[in-house]
Image (cartoon, rainbow, N blue to C red; front, side, top):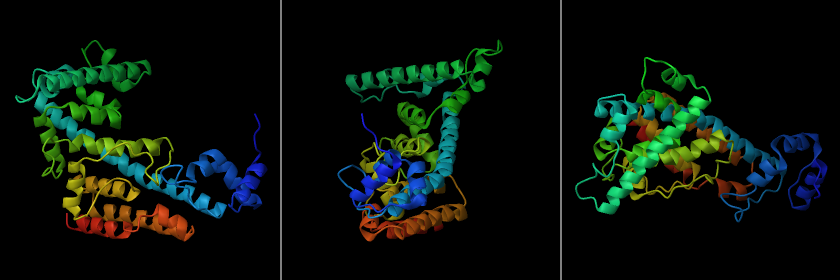
Length: 329
């Protein structure tokens, strides 16, 4: 199987209309990689939407924009994940009146026996299957943590004074996806309590699904950031937002639509959570200002045909509405 040297790849790019040359751009191509860099960033959302780059400077600017987005979003994402975990944990401990995982299963997780009175037999079976899947997932996580000598778990299994791992220790090893699934398995009363503790706008959320639907939405972005995947075009998006997911944010901020097809919508969701979690306004405004700064810098680094594809035309007005929401809450 043949391969191309860096010089040959540069020639290939020139032959395809992307100007590149000199030691600086050669080093950039080596460091970012032809396959991870150029081939990963030459399209928007999917391979059928090629970005009309005319120089490698524009490719590199796109890679840098994506990197700066990840650097901006990651610490805020970790803060939101940790805060939501702790709010949910307190609600579960109070509702279960115990720190026992088994009591959590018995008292606050939906099952066949505690299904809503109007649930059909099939719906009850689905709830029971979800509970069993949750139990399997938790046991697998505990076993994996024990195998890796995670002190948050081995402390309890290797100490004769304890009979099991408490719920709060389990939360320490849960991923964002694990958290979302656990929240989805909770009985309505507990989901309602967590929603109210967070302060979510549940006017359109009849079934109290927002607490886990939004976590799943953020989880996709979080995982893309953590694995250094592309984020600027939301190709990581795995959800089809529900009416409640859209209505909540539209009502709160006066937006005309929400679809999570642009990175701006994820900025809106994260800022919404930051407001709910009482993050200081100055910090949220600085977050939005930095997002706008790196986006403006990118806009000025590429030709207008590229920026028109990458930056949604109403991004500025939507961020302005978001900023007004932050100032009044």
